[in-house]
Image (cartoon, rainbow, N blue to C red; front, side, top):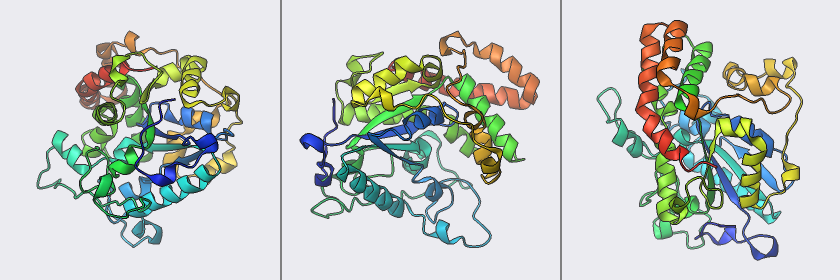
Length: 351
């Protein structure tokens, strides 16, 4: 089923002598990625782990985001290094693989992006200097040498902060959505939980561009799955590309394709669920409530009725000007146009 090559001996622990899949759900804000994760949650052949590196990215001592530091030390944030997150993930993988299950790892790409990759697209400045790439070592490798076999991220080739030896073991699902849908949706979510104007910030641009999913896709095609680009609208080789609107509008087709490649039973896919109660939502952080509002209020898949190929950016931009005013509306249009080539490139490979 197209398993990736592995230099990690501990990965060879599986039923019938085959390695369980490590499915890496490479996500992007407002692409309906939470729908896909929801559908796999509780699948008897899978165990899920989500946003392992979010705290390290946002608030940890090596934080790569522009989020302000807490005025007072927060113990769990002070310990949230990328190495600690990676060790936690490796422990989880080892335990689940001993059970013979596949793993579904969900992570926003921007949370694990090498800052040097970011700097190539957005050059550092006095106000935004280049951040060092956090050192991460794959301690599960038998020889234990930091720089052997891509075991450390010091000599790595992949665009994340994680070592090649680990990244090569992953089977990626890269999720996208037309930027004229995802970018204004992200802006609405941001301004609903914060008063600042996010649209001009580096954080907004880095969170909404599809440059990073494209770089990840190309790296896997070059280093792990060299024949992937021979099939455009393909679903018989990793990395898979899933468009969020395809997912909600043609859910059965998309999920069948994913399960076929991953050798997962479609009967384990969640199609219906109970809405989250108000009592539970009130205990959630405000940003969680906002970003998950549609999913948490639903009891199943909600079709969007949208198709990327039918969207005319100029017509959508007129709506943004009316909704947000000319300055913000035009900035959103610029952000959409700046990443359209990246989106269209990936879209040609979608399921």
